[in-house]
Length: 337
Ligand SMILES: [Mn+2]
Image 1: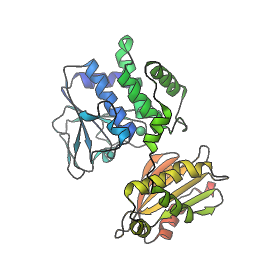
Image 2: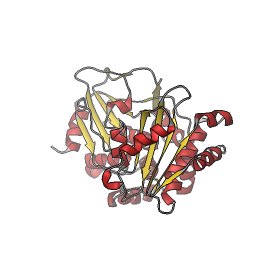
Image 3: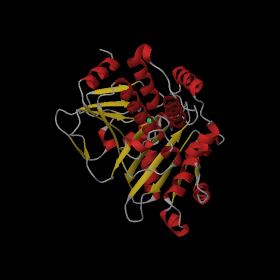
Image 4: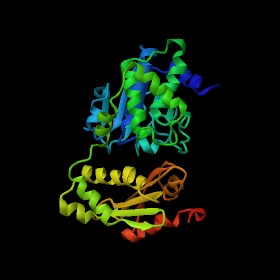
């Protein structure tokens, strides 16, 4: 049986349905979840739906302005996630339960479906995985419900808006390899109904804080070049001394990773290591590479993390910044060195 028919059967025999996504949801996580709710309510209005996400509740404008954002119930980060009251749990933009919550309460007969587009190994608890390797989970949801709805499929404004935001944000404006003719076709179909203003959306998506300029400067100052690689680190002392916020750090970091190194002459890949706090020996590693160069997900996976071929991350234990860097370099494939 095809995936969408299996999905249809699972939905039809369920009454209480939970829709959820990975913790710290990004735009695609929420747009794919809200799209799923929107489509299911149209197809099966008599069922009971809840959309619940691990908090803290986001206050980012690009998320709070999504149609349906107010329908999301947020549960505290440390609380266990209770799946036990639902017949069916649909997880969006994640193929692994760990991405949703560390602790989950459920019955043996809780049916879980994952609709994802990451290259991850799904848990054995998940009954059905729908993963076409699309550009965004929102693209997969759109395609799934188009098949399920058949000739009754229509694109309304909410569908058009959510789908475009999910795809644009997860592809960094159609930059990544997973963008396909299907992606463009869906975008074309959606823009006929409602066209997103790309520049306004992009500014909301990226929104660099003013003080992120200090973080960016710090990263550039610490940058080490090695053939086609550039890496750098962020010192927690610097962050504390300057009174920088988490948003400043993530803005400065992502500007370096997602925009700056990609356009640097002769550079194919890079990463940043960042100590998670003063006291812990934990470091966050964020890796990026450009199309046609090395698979950074493989490196991240060997270090216990994951992500995409050209954008991945992990957390490692290290004694110092140099130790963290050398742990990453140890896993660069020999063929690439
Ligand atoms: Mn996604």
